[in-house]
Length: 318
Image (cartoon, rainbow, N blue to C red; front, side, top):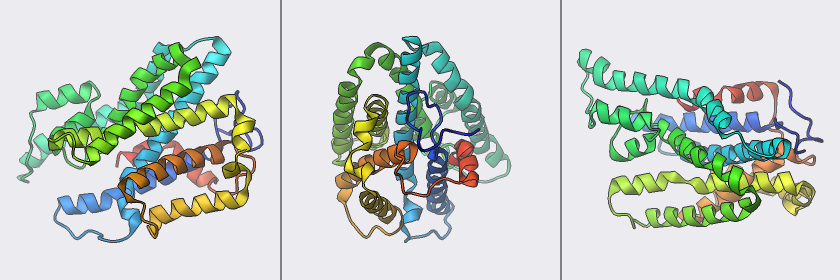
């Protein structure tokens, strides 16, 4: 399905942005590559010890969080402008139809694989959890909590990020419906609180390993950053795109070079907190620039990657 041209992208009637499907594919590819060393290590096989791209799966998930916050908030703001409100039930139903079938297919297959198939094949694999408790957590969309408590295996492990997104969406639609006029303040508040939790988790404040992992994976500051960008583009498009990071092509090239360095060479070392902030800024900039900037100089879009981006959810779960 064709999207708007770059010249018109970002108008408030827009429902499809050019280039974002390609970005979705690139991020999914990084997640897929990032699973290679994890899967190799779990099987006792040789794994890559160098090459930044092999260790950018988690940062690519953070990009997905930013993109999700942007797109969902844009659609909610557009619905408010068109209808005067948000049909929260319809919003939830769309999410259920899009996400749940593959999510629960992986849940049931993963649980059967580790608890039934491997034992029948005589392959030893330590299972730390009981199936009833696992089903309870997965059914209530808490795979991130499941991951924090137990080692769940490579099939089930990627589901944690789906849980974080679904938990955010559960609260976000009614929040935008009721408080859309205060959305910037809400986003800045979420950013502040979530970054504080991230810092405390990184510094070992929460003690138990399970709690450290759970709080470290929440990362809703990325979704809040994407949501804030959507609000700014929706209400202040011309002012936003007049900023030097969008209006000056040399600045675009510099920011793109910083992003490529992080994913492929890591020549610049930002530190653990600096890396989080750099990702927040660069992901948000990249999404707006590719989606809505008529002066965008980044050649990210083509027919193949656009198509692969539309089916990236499946890649993401590999």
